[in-house]
Amino acid sequence: MLLELKRIYVPPGQRVLLQNVTWTELEAILEELGEHRAARIAYDRGILEIMAPLPEHEFDKEIIGDLVKALLEELDVEFVSLGSTTFKNQFMEKGIEPDQCFYIKNEALIRGKKRLDLTIDPPPDLALEIDITSRTHPNIYLALNVPELWRFEKGSLKINLLQDGNYVESQSSLNFPDLPLIEVIPEYLEKSKTAGRNATLKAFRNWVRQQRL
Image: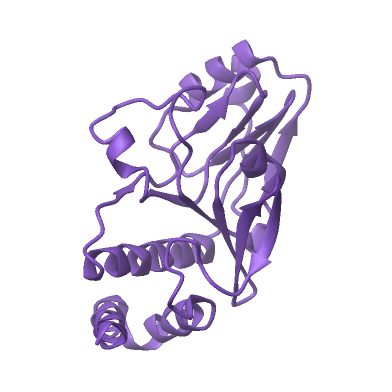
């Protein structure tokens, strides 16, 4: 399996599916791939997906992630940003690497930890997926009990909240309930493509401060 894996080349924007992958094999594959890589994985009961993101996917991920960080900083909320950390649960036979994720309400529970185990640790409070390649796997996030999933697709931000065992699309965020983020986040993302990252983040921070007055 590992010898074959080394020979696999996944072009940007494409994905490879491997079937009948055991949990032991998954752990070995993750070890082989290493942590410092562009490819993302998703694992659901024996089916492993390996996807290589497009440059535009990475751009959107970074800017939206920066906007969320700026928002949390302006609101003076402690958080941990774990990027594309691998989250997996052996009992559920599921694993995922979000484009970006944040511990917010549960930040204190994982503060200082170098490794997370979702059989005992809480899942991220917020996960972000950029859907340029239609990679999002809501069923995996659902099984891992991630309370809020953001999906950015075709210039639109969709906020999904976990309610009664299912994701329900919402006009507002669970973590930022009083802010119109489904309109504002895409607006500032688009602004960054002409004004630049730093100018956009500065303008966004000013907007957040105005909302608090």
